[in-house]
Image (cartoon, rainbow, N blue to C red; front, side, top):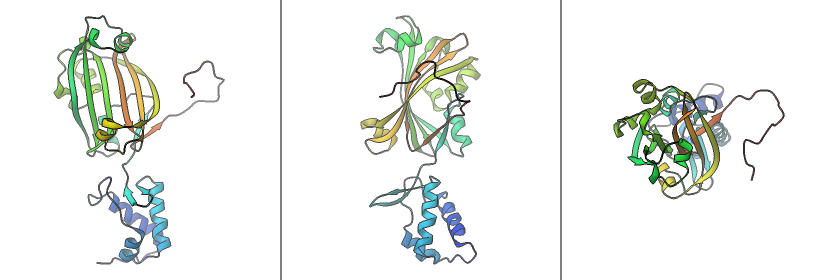
Length: 255
C-alpha cells in the first residue's frame, strides 16, 4: 500500500520515516535499502526530495552509496575513546548495541615458545606462562574487532575460555582485584585482507585500524600485549586536545 506524506515540511518527515525504517529489524546492517524510485512510489514525493533524504541519511552514516549497486544500511559507529580504557562490552551497550564474543583460540603457552618481541615487552622470564587468545567481538551480531592478545598468567591464574565471553577488564578488576594503571597504544591505518577480512565480513582490502597496545598494572608492571584489528567503518576515534604546544620529540613515524 502506498503511504503519502501530507504534513510540511515533506523532506524532514520523509527523512524521519526512512530513519525509523533503517533502525527497524526490517533492514539489518548490510542490507540493501529502498531506491529513489521506490521511495517516490511509496510516499508520493518527488525524485529530488527522495534524493535529498537519502543523501542526508548517508551524511548521518546510517546509509552508504555503492556506485553502480545501490544504497545499503551501514554499521553504526562505535566510539573509541583515546583518553581512557573502556571495555568493548560497556562501549557497545552505551551505544545501544548488543555485544557478543566468539573465542577463536585460547591456550597457555611458555614465553620461551613465543617467537616475537612479546616476552620482552611483557618483561617475563623464559619459563613464565602466558595466555594467548584470539577473539572476534561483535555488536548486534556484526563483527567489528579481531583481537589477538598475550596475558601474563601469574596475575590471573585459572583464567578460562568461558571468562573470555565478556569483559576481561571486569574479570581483572572484580575477580582478581588488579589495579590497571593504563595502556600505551599505537594506532595505524591498514587494509584488511585474507582470513582477517573474512572474519570481519568485509571486502578484501577494506580499510581498518591496527591498534597495538601494552597494558600496565600499578607499579608499571605489564599485564597484556595485544595486536587488534578494528573495522574502519565501525569505529570513530575521539579525543580532546589541549592548547598549541611546540613539539618536543616525535611520537609517530611519517611515511
